[in-house]
Image (cartoon, rainbow, N blue to C red; front, side, top):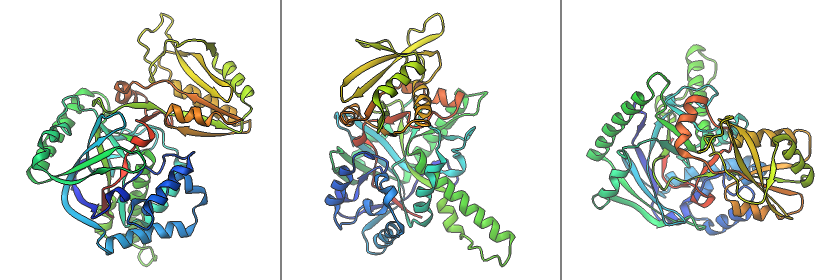
Length: 444
């Protein structure tokens, strides 16, 4: 296999898929009660929950928790919990909270074409800056994993709707792999196997897509895919692959060193990572800003700092905004736009209007200001999907919620090509409950 995005040997739960599928590990980090509910629902049934580590549990996880993850993976491979479907893609339809349907294709990408480091010009690039301190915990799981589960959403920019959307009209002739309601208000999901002649047709469409992207970006380093969600999980997969390559090279160069040499099959499997491909052009692909909640702060002091540092003014009504990439639709002659920042505290909600030079990223201005403040003042920060959740959490004493402006998804590939990855936690693909659930698996 030497293609950028290709088929794989699919593993799926034989029974109780509604207990198997759980939401991405980096969700509900400020709401441990959500994960308590997952644990109660799942119980001892085969579940992806037993094969992942939710971030809310990260600081408390000891060696036993990591060992338990590997034991669960081994058990599911050995006891027949997982059914196999060789050499295929999975066409997915996810019905979201508002009734819209997000279409996707589950396959694997070649990690040789992905680089998460700053300055990357790889064909597959992250959308946000990778915080390398977040990789080790994920790498610890990945390096010992027997199966791969993925919550990664990979973006394509397919204005001809030639890759994913054609399968919607072919569902009746495809094998349905699953069709059920997701737990905890996650909506509905259904998936169909794409293999054989149809997989070959998809590969031809991908080749055409690559040619179009190369032509559109002539004179620059082209981007074929961008990681829309799960940046750090994919970075961990890449780091693990590079680790195995280094071990292989060391074992070849130093005879008798005692270095365990990864076998060819293991290295080949590690070279690929499972993702769900989604089209940024789809109406169902809604980009939501990721908001901020600060706790343990002096609220008046923080708000005063933001007003002084950002030149913000309080506004009674909605103000004209630049979009999330700083491309306002009515840029002033002076080359400046403004954007609105919603501020929530236990005393209520207000709106701040903040000036920005044309091309400035609102999220970058806000994050830089918060990093500066927290560098010399007490307090903690978390990143929240959903304005209502921010408002709820901001009702507590010593808490400040910041509601960031919306994102214009049409500018995403253009921004990354010109400037590199976005700042961390810039946008989210939909609300928290609309994140990708762990469902399909593959052997590592």
